[in-house]
Length: 348
Image (cartoon, rainbow, N blue to C red; front, side):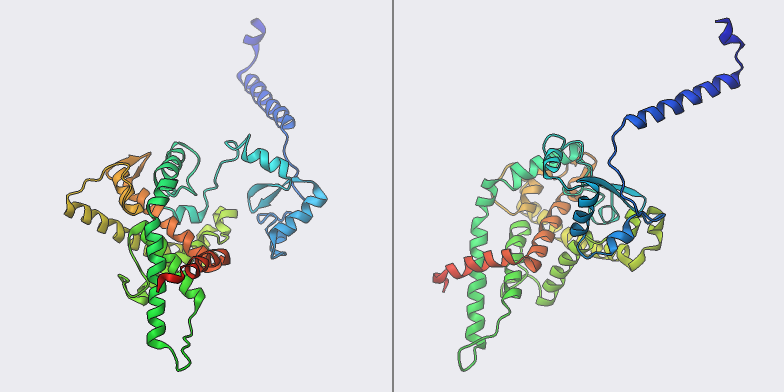
């Protein structure tokens, strides 16, 4: 006790600092970290290496052959773990799924998802768990999809009949009519999902908007999905975000502003319709489109910091954006829709 009292305050501070540094060094030495591959540039990290190959997965596969199935790379100032082993990947998505469920807060997520209100971009937590449960059991359950089957059948029949009417009016002397089937199938898929989500029809003889407005809206949703996948230098080097190289962040804000105005209009129309009919909404109702059902479920509530309007708009936007992407670029969806159409031979 006397020896401790004789120590000067400076000596005590030095001992505390030494103990802290020693603890951190020993703790770090015991932790197991995946090796970082060589070749990282200052600030940019391994971004120049990734830019050399148009197919990143092939490049990472070659690196795995040289450095093992688990390694890390530096995306600017951010370190990322790469796993090229199916056993480890399976363990990450099963046993340790909670430990790796973190979603990075990217520029696109901050700009285009209502401040992370979209389920696919929301961080893991109570909001994510509650929304996933609601979507799985209330909106995307088998009974809900089955309840909307008449909408899908009706839209396919209506689109096929309109195509037949178009042929009768515009056929040539040889009874032929040039039709862009890719465009027709894309509009059909968009109509089906739009009717299920918002109860509207944007293409065809009974569309609620002009053709140019409908195509512009579809182009906005397609561009939305493209911008979500754009690599932003600000995600890798945050202090370079201010420069907005390529103008991507500005394009994100403009695109999101346009889509938010469209979805907000749909939501307000649904609210006006409910007020006009004197319907307050009943939870768990089976009829109606997704916006109507979500209004009955969430209207006027606050879900872990997000108001009901934000949650409804975020859910509607992501559903329509996904179908816009697949309808434009996914041949399998076009094949499925065309198969349904041509099997309905008695539609005429």
